[in-house]
Image (cartoon, rainbow, N blue to C red):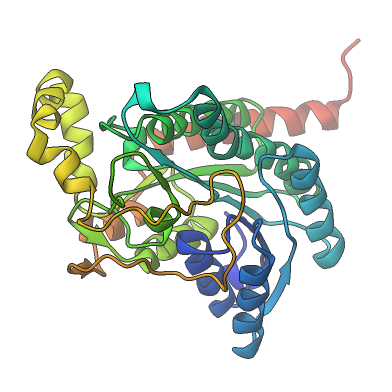
Length: 340
């Protein structure tokens, strides 16, 4: 069982805007000490000011998640400042929209370096600190695109499949050793954040989240819930069930549906021309925002998310049993000492 959130030190990578920023605010509101990291210094400073103005505790550590030395230094700074790390949240992401043949090798590499390798670096930085703290939780923000691929977003989709696989492998390895470290993957559907305005577009117009669209606070609540009551995976937004069903029941049929133009590019782009700015290679300056500019209705509740965030599935319970068996075996071996 993880500590109550109010007793935790939480590191959030990718906290300058969107889901990461919303999570930092929610953790601080519930009493956690929060270490926020991202590339945009001005956005981190404004976030710390907002948290401290509300009576919270926060520390900003400018970090490029694509640089492993900086991520390790982030972990060291957090542990030095607060004595421990209890939860580590990987939330940084960049995106390039377009047809695969129009996206360069360098752009594919950059997206994978931030969205996937950045999470690897986060895991490597978090694990030693969580072991020293006696346990904790590693949370990764994947996407429903890690369940079901979509057109015109291949680098991002591929990175989220990779993140989901990374966290699955890590979860199994920790269970094998009986570790008190839990691993949760968050799978948001379409969320109204600045992510779309910050993306690079080769579609001739600015991208947008396809409806139904959910509020970032809904994802933040799922993240904070996982820090105290971790489960294996948490889809955020009722539309996530469509991604699960499409991939499990008939991937080929889902391919056919997504091949229809009105279900593809038309649902993912706006009528506005792309502004030419993005955060793929360099941060976008500004004070940082939680919400994007989606003009339609934004849903603020999801019964599916509330249920799955609080209800472990049978397989999770069985994995927990195996974990505890290995933990007891390790403890008995330590007490008995080496065998002759």
